[in-house]
Length: 174
Image (cartoon, rainbow, N blue to C red; front, side, top):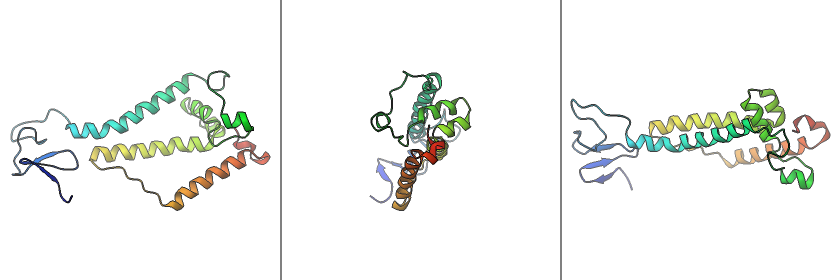
């Protein structure tokens, strides 16, 4: 449907702001009239920020738990099923130890436990900041990768998995 949707005498834009058709501010329009001040951010902005902030809260809670319950001590976390059955390290093996070291500020230990996971923490932070800024501005976050990028990421993970399970790649093993 082209253009904004009409709802009575008020147009609702994609950003969630209500704009009157006549250009004058009125009650419930999301714009302050002459001589009035708005109490805070519009509901649309709070709604847009809810998802990225909820994701941040969830990730923070998970990292806080891993930071307090040491995965280096046996019995706290289940063993990786692939490692238990085959004895081979998957791309995620060492991820909890990596997160624990990352939370405690030991980037060297985090990187040696799982280099891909540690790189992923920084990548997640960058994408999350981009998402938050775009949500604040009322823009959607659309990250579209060409199939070649997805194949490259898959190949990188496969190479990482194979190399960390070979004798010469033992430095990549957790």
